[in-house]
View 1 (spheres, helix red, strand yellow):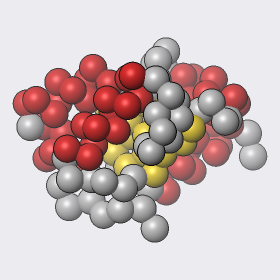
View 2 (cartoon, helix red, strand yellow):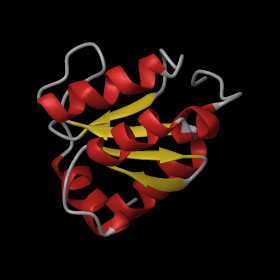
View 3 (cartoon, helix red, strand yellow):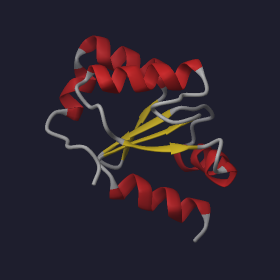
View 4 (cartoon, one colour):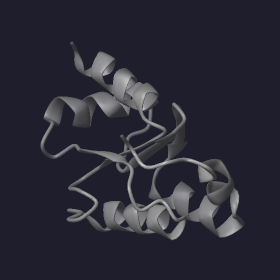
Length: 107
């Protein structure tokens, strides 16, 4: 499977996917750390994440998949939401909490 197929499977196979640098327990950049904090503040302590530093094909492939040049990238129910700044704005307005309402942790 190529990177685009893997990404499509990940995005469609999990209710919430965060492509980030590092892991939720050990983010490797400030933007990824902030994205994790925002999701946790939305009462979503567990979610599917992909450490793009460990998967270089995914790191480049996700930018093509979303047509978005930066990381982290958040997907909810298969839809690209945006990066850290968009997540923050949506959190502050309450929109992100509404999108995440009722979503369970990953299998």
